[in-house]
Length: 268
Image (cartoon, rainbow, N blue to C red; front, top):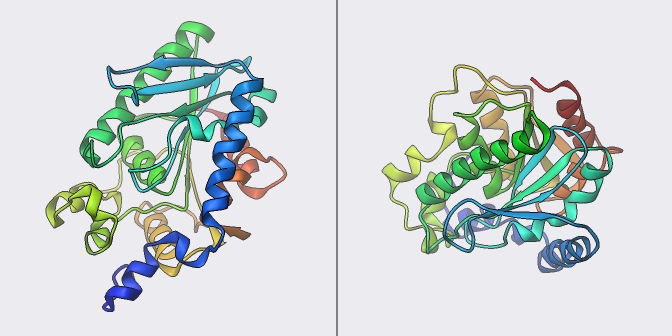
């Protein structure tokens, strides 16, 4: 069930923090961890547009592999810089890690944000090719970032796609607080929902995952999207919630981290 008749229950289901009492602390860990990494490691910031939020941060690895991560925040919070905490594990195995910044709502529409991600990915590929001679990209995203990654992957060939705690039908958000910043109507939301669009003719190797401690709506969104794209069932990560499951992406001792690593190793 992606829609709930009771408005309070509907809001709760689409508010990941409703069942995570320490959500603010966990988000704070993104920022503090990223600040520590950025002070300790060299990285290159590449602008892909004139806006201060249109940038990517590249933490260079030794190979032509790149892991590109799109942050969440319901299209209106966080930043590319706040995802730098994931970089060290990728760099240490030779994979460049790239955190993507993009314009946020309400200053930018979801359509404009998608245009940012598309352009950023093209610029990343060009930059890695110029530096390494080739480029094999695994694209990942968390929450709203998973939505952006799924939409973007429809028109890009990738070594792999990792979608974490995503939302793939954004029509239900019209009835929530989230739409205060997005100003979506039904038709626009439907056009922007990968769960409502035909699956791509060729699907990139894809892993879908969510935390065990998520709301039913987020779990059902992932399950419905996996079925829609004819993919294996999502990975349910034990003991993880909407905000801390992303840490497993950079930890190869976890099932999610191993899945990301396998995509890097095989490429396309």
